[in-house]
Image (cartoon, rainbow, N blue to C red; front, side):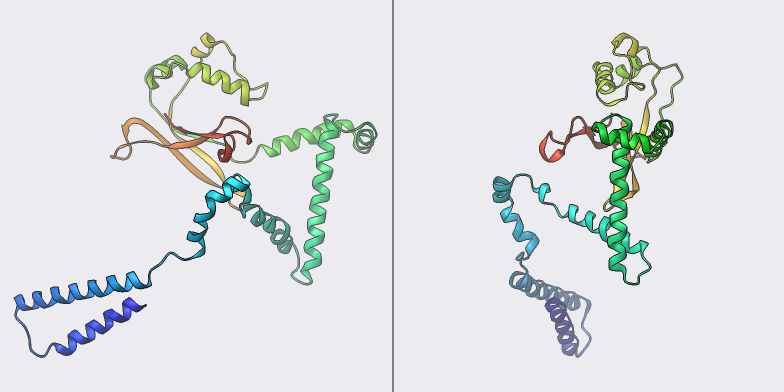
Length: 284
């Protein structure tokens, strides 16, 4: 604000001193002098009034001490409180009639928690993980066949979230196998990496063979793009599609090659500190 006020004052003074028209050379000289004067005054204003003494900058000075005393900073993130506010307050308010909504919010949240606990107990009973009396009670309440059917349907429903999708296949005139892709990208350990991933992350029905020779003979295809669905902050039911590109040595849209970096889950959340079981990896 002070800088704007000063500029208006300089313009007013310049207009008041312009009594008679000046030649082009003198106009340029006067303009240069005014510009230099303005820059000097603005520099003084910025030096006197600009500072970084506000809370977000001040907290940076305490990060080192807090990490040494309390550990990982994300453990004290406000994200948990924000999500709880949405789940416990906002969702219940939207389900209310906006009249005496406090009681309706509490009742709505209590119903959701009760149903969630019942669903969890039914799942555990179906897998035989509950103690005898309680497991038998739930099994008697719900027919065993209908319980298994419900479990299968619920598992199918849980898989209906957006999945990672490959786009932009790389054209090839010949039949390609994993051994060909391995040579193209220059990674001789690719079959072993796929075998390790299959053993660690896939279900029994989806796992691939662990025989490296058989893996090399599997049909394979390369793609240029990977679509990844990422849940929105505080909106876990909504997703944003992030597109990871991989052009290897070819330029992307007439520019330089593009091989994006992504985070890959390689362990449980207790590993690698703040990375929570993920490591950065470049698409190739």
